[in-house]
Image 1 (cartoon, chains in turn blue, brown):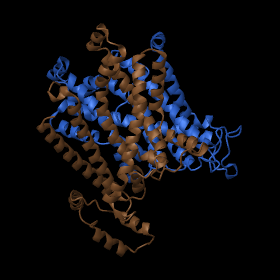
Image 2 (cartoon, rainbow over the protein chains, first blue to last red; image 1 turned 180 degrees about the vertical axis):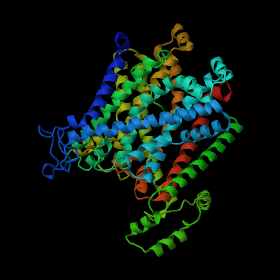
Image 3 (cartoon, rainbow over the protein chains, first blue to last red; image 1 turned 180 degrees about the horizontal axis):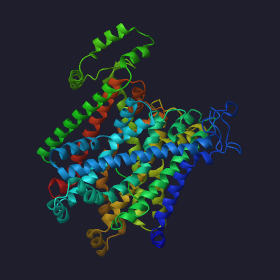
Image 4 (cartoon, chains in turn cyan, orange; image 1 turned 120 degrees about the vertical axis):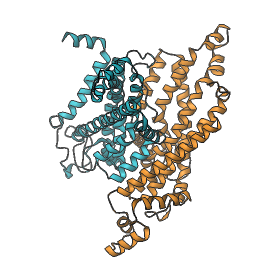
Length: 287
Length: 313
């Protein structure tokens, strides 16, 4: 308890953003409690109502309550982006460590694939993959994962290359440690902090990419409550019902801001040496 | 850049293109859905199994995968990317017709973005820690966190629907149709570039030559514009090249919002109607353009920075 207090006092920014992120997650988890209506129940008599005391954010063209849909949208957006980041971080880290540790042909193959992905605008391929696989949230996640894992592979590989000639690794090898033991006890713990920081800063942009695919019709399928898809549905009613595109967009924006700030402050907590990164406003990878 | 390096780069481009062609062809090959059925559905007829099979035979779709791939590849190398069945025109002609609008849009957004980011970045670097620095950094943070399709929708609503100063559908050729899509794209890039300019300026301002110039009593404005600016702006060129490349592929969302007739909206239509030859052609084209642009950027670097030509770095 005492330790926690000291941590909070030392990292006020991180604590704040962590709590905010927890709040967003809580909205997703407790969506049934927070929602005032059934997000999928269409009441055609109430179609396209402006925001008011009964429907806080108004209703869409099917008469569904927009507030409840935005609340439920947190579920699909959040779970999809977290799943995506975990997926690419796990796959990328694993392959990167393998490439760095074993070198040789394995390294060459993994790195050439990664070169290919870098010398190519990822969104184009993601679009093609998502479109060809068919519209679904799972396929959208897969499509973005296919083009995004290489960043983590590069990171993990370079970190492994840095430590593989160290004495303690050599000692582990000489004393007959199994490769799996070296992997879990030496390589992974060395790589993890950097991967965590990168992953946390990536959640926001990944969320936007998923929403963009859904917006284009290559992600979530109707009638799912998903923010990108809701924006797409609201687009046609822009003149008559502007609230349909205001609230889902605002939800994306707020969530992305919270997770971007969380990622930046996590960097400050885990990597205090890096003085060149101005705190609070970190950089974004060149995409 | 030495000749051998250039050769290496060319080789790399060829290899990557080869890999990408294989991946896209493989994907469309494995894709669920039957292109032949979709082709007939597009023309409004429901053919019998017999006719479907005949068409497959005629199109070479019954051949084994590798034969199909090699056939397709050799056609591509001769400049024949096949025919789009949803639009019934050669893929190459379709792509070519849409290339210029997208290029125009990308360039306009880059220029617009530079006009905003460079002054803002310089301002926040020079006034580091001041109020303007905080405001600029807050703005760039917003720019990075706002989804660009939402920005596009809001702009469209405010300026197109409410104020009526620009057309809601940007399908014509006029300059006013370019403005909103360009602003939307520029907004998304602004944050990244402002930060880059700021960082580059701060780094240069700490260099010895700046201290030296200050000691000699040279005016601060002269130092800033004559000495620091050229050095700080150089790394931007690489970023600009990369951005132009990813814009060519990444304008899709914005093009769809504004109904702008570019490569991106063509690709989205192609994917929706499962027009495989068009999708394949699009991916290959964008890959090629992107890599050629990157090569040009690297070449221009050695022209613009004398240190590289002499082999100093």
